[in-house]
Image (cartoon, rainbow, N blue to C red; front, side, top):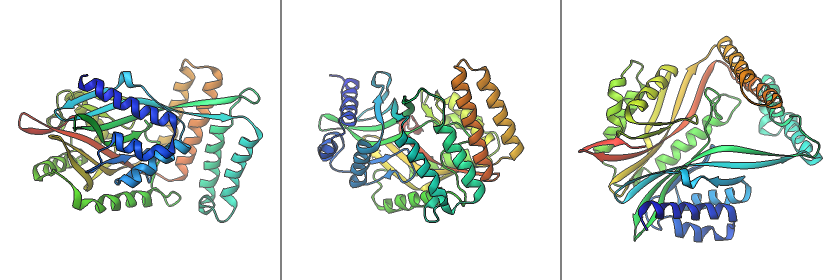
Length: 377
């Protein structure tokens, strides 16, 4: 059995566990898929889902199996790249949720809205404008014409990134990142006094600081490499010609949207456009995870995107998006839903002000090629 077949078998074991949802088998699952010794980590889709210990990894799996939607991996379309005794793997996936159109569902959403005014829930402490626009946003997603008693199945696109290491004649998992593609500038987390995401971001930095003493195999040259890259992406002057040297010839870039970009030159163009769009990109490299896998390295950290967006510019962008929806080849019913959702998104964002600060996670696989370091992912 060749390496890629073995890796796909490991992915199938992972898929089977998510279908079975056997919480009592969590420890056995970890023992069969992760190394029993050494560092392992998971980055989940939500704030607070940075798992840097075996216990927190186990807790995330149990939570997913109890409460998450139905996860389906597209294993046949996985991108697998081997580097000796290490490999990375990008797997497209979906998460399905079903929503029923019954009285219990309506009552649950009424309860969500009541929490904005109960004087004790987190949402009740928000400003009036934020309360009203968040309620409107909530209802725009929920209230949509459908047949009586009809169930609605939602499929969310998901990407899963694995770092694998070959030990004792088998591939094991060292790191996983789950992520949902999102359209800018409406990320799912934004710093504002009426949100808790700044505190969550600071907690992640503290978690990284807590493992600073157990970083393995990541030396001064590797740290200088990522620091040089951090300085490059934070600069505003056009430096496109300098960016390709940080990437392997066939590297993969997975951005915050759903587009995958292959190749050093294409990645350089994308990064240059990101630096042009954002007023500031801040990557916290010191507080990070830095570990060896085989002869390669995996690295992950947190950062911030920052930008000032005038209200009128946001409204014009929303109007343009509405017009693009009107031209889309989807049903009139779906057009109305998307338009209402997009307008409610914009109204909610307007209440947070013109300063947009979004936290993000940075994940990388670093290899040595021709005696120099480069990102392969």
